[in-house]
Length: 154
Image 1 (cartoon, rainbow, N blue to C red):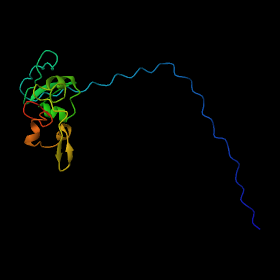
Image 2 (cartoon, one colour; image 1 turned 90 degrees about the vertical axis):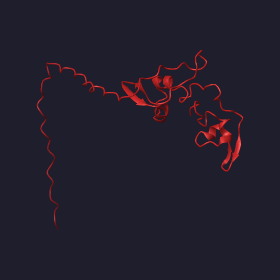
Image 3 (spheres, rainbow, N blue to C red; image 1 turned 30 degrees about the horizontal axis):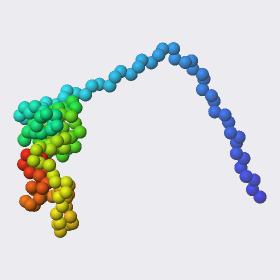
Image 4 (tube, rainbow, N blue to C red; image 1 turned 180 degrees about the vertical axis):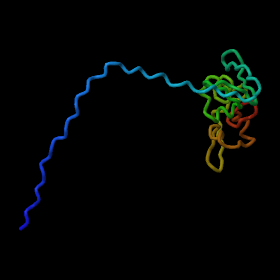
């Protein structure tokens, strides 16, 4: 019969020598570097003064075409539709310059008829549904804002 091999008993690892605590304090980290210079703005016409929203004694108006707006630390050029498409209607400079596109106000004669309905091959549409489709001519007079009738935005 064979005898099993003997396993040696475990030994304790040596403990490291105790080192004294540091006497000098480590200096605090320096602040992170600031970002590089802001990029130069693209050439664009000077921005139109911010319109006064309807109900505030002024008119509900926004300029057509491109403008340059300050958004945060940067200046961007584009038209109201582009600013809206990029989700910037929450920025004060954008909603001030594009109150119609951003939904702050509706120009006179551009209010959609809340009771309008028309039967289509895809069901009954109200002005709200027409926002995502090319409006029929017969719908434009009932839903000028939703249909993007010139001067009414979209």
